[in-house]
Length: 110
Image 1: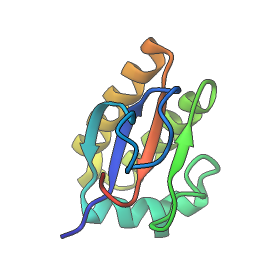
Image 2: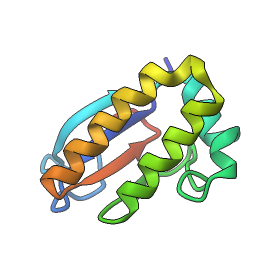
Image 3: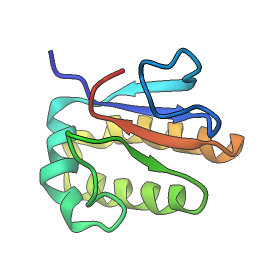
Image 4: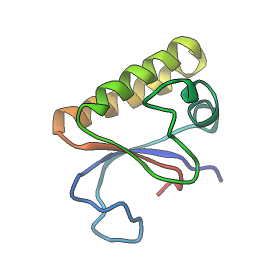
């Protein structure tokens, strides 16, 4: 089963899915279609998204969250079929910004 997640992530939590102290405040399961677009498609053209992969975690924090949101909005403009899902992801980014925490992309679906 395909699993690629975006978490609203606490800064104090280590990036190790085996550690019981890991804290995800919110999780969004990204569809295979959108994940492929972010990892291989339009995401490769955008500075904030071009490092996303299926083999490693990617953490965004502080001022990077604004750039991440803008990049996702650009993808939504190009790929209307993902507008609703990207809107949900943008809600998660706003929660992270308001709480002063991070966004973690997890290609292992933990």
